Every structure is written in structure tokens, then in C-alpha cells.
Amino acid sequence: MNLSAWNKVVVAAAVLIGASTGCDKLGGGKGKGNGSGSETKTGSNGSGAAASTGPILIGHFASLTGSEATFGVSTDHGVILAMEERNAAGGVKGRKIELKTLDDASKSSEAGNVVQRLISEDKVVALLGEVASGSSLAGGKVAQQFGVPMISPSSTNKKVTEGRDMVSRVCFLDEFQGYVVAKFAKDNLKLDKVAVLFDQAAPYSKGLAETFKSEFEGLKGTVVTSQAYTAGDADVSAQLQSIKTSGAQAVFLPGYYTDAGNIVNQARKLGITVPFLGGDGWDSAKLAEIGGTAIEGSYYSNHYSFDEERPAVK
Image (cartoon, rainbow, N blue to C red; front, side, top):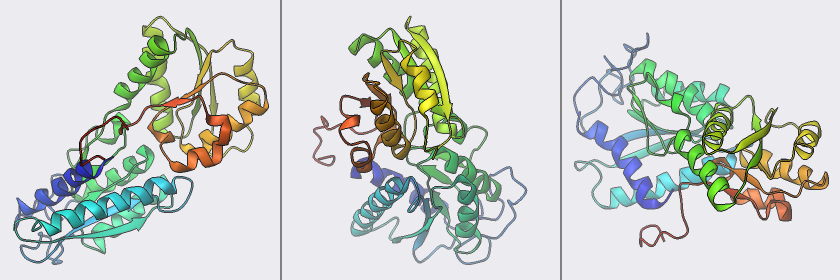
């Protein structure tokens, strides 16, 4: 996501607070959330209402370590750049924005705990995060419970916001992403038969695999086999052997970059030469590091395009 877009994310979170100064709807009190914790005091002044003066404290929960660390690190850099740009322009209604970032270690099981700390201990009045849909689902549950607004920069699974009026996003959904990849496979690559290999434990991967299959079949293509793995599996040779004998002309692998790089390497060693297709979970400089030359000739969808000509993006 480019800096201009990040500025919109940070400002959106800050304006939610700036426009409601002195109101108990945000930062705790009687939040809009439907959860049982909506009465918990989370205002930055400890009174259950957002402070009307001083800095606006926003929380960011991110994968700064672990298997998806490049997501969290690059996201945090983007948030900081956008925050500094906004503060240099006067902040929000004369108030500066401050940021508190906590690491969820790329674990959805930790995301909820981190969000609770940001709300209950650090007294943030709005939240940014996460990149991974599984972590956004976990963090969003807590944000909804406490009535604190949360904006995800790039979680594409539709369930992240379903039934949660305190949780928003600023990116496309997997329904759109799955369609785009399926159409690209059919129209641009002229493929008729594709295999799918997805992470059965990740809402992002599972949801995107389902959408791609539906869209590709709707375009008169055939998913010849659908195989599952779990993130971190060192050996997926059995699944890859099934794909090798399936007649697939390509493999759709909607996982995150660490697994994608490792799996494509394994595939090449097994003699699978067809291209791999991925989603925005592949978007990391580490992908080429891990996948090496094996990843060359493959494709993935993304929020950012190198063809974008706007100066702010460049």
C-alpha cells in the first residue's frame, strides 16, 4: 500500500476520535460494540471517555516477528510515515497523533491478547491492524467487545468485518481478488485446468481458495485437484505428487510468502514446471529470497501496481 493510502488509514482512525471529542462512544464507555466488555474504561484519560486535549493515541497490532514479519514491519513503517506527514500538517484539529505498536508474533492466538493490552493498558482510542485475516478476526473480536474502532489495512477475508460495526478495512475482498486471479488465469494465461493448494488453518488461504475455485469454474475452467496443507509444514511432497499427476496447467497457492517460497521450491525439485499463482499474501521481498529462481514465471495479485503514475505512489 502506498504512502498516500496509508495517510488515509491513519487520518481515518484519528478523525474518528477528533470528530467525537468528549463523547463516550469511542475509547471505551458505552461503545457501539455489541460485546459484553463495552463498559470497560479505555479512554486515554482513564475515565472511560476519550480525552479532549493532548495527543491522540492510536494502537497498531502487527506481525513484527514470526513467519509474516515482513508484513508487520513494512506496515508499521508505512503507518509511521503517514503519521509524521499528518502531524507535520498540523495533526487532527490541532492535536498530534501518537502511535503505540505491539507485536503479535504472527500468531492469531496472540492478536486478541495484544489488542486487549492496547485498549486496557495503553488506553488507545482507535486501532490499526492487522495484515493477516486470522489475526484481524481475533483482534477485531476484542475491539468490537470494547467498542473501540479498528481499521485493517489489508485483511481481505470477508468475515473480518461481518457483524462488527466497529471494524473496517481499506482493501479489496477475497471475492474480488479470487475473481481477478481466475480471470487472469483464463483470459491471459489461457488455462483450462488448475490445481489448488491451500492452507487449511488460515481463514485467508481457505477463503481465497474457495473463491478462486468458484470463479474459475464459472469461467468454464476446471480445478482438477484441491490439496490442503498447514502453515509451516516442512514436507508437502504427497500433495505435490497428486498435483503433478493431475494434469494441472498451473497451481493456485493462496498462502503467505514463507510457505509459498518453500512449496514452490519443493515443487520444482519434484519436476513440477507449471507456473504458480498466488494472492496478496505473496507480497514480500522475502518471497524471492526464499523461493529463489524457482518462483520465476509465477504470478500474484496485489494492492499495489508498479504501473501507477501518481507522484505520491512513486
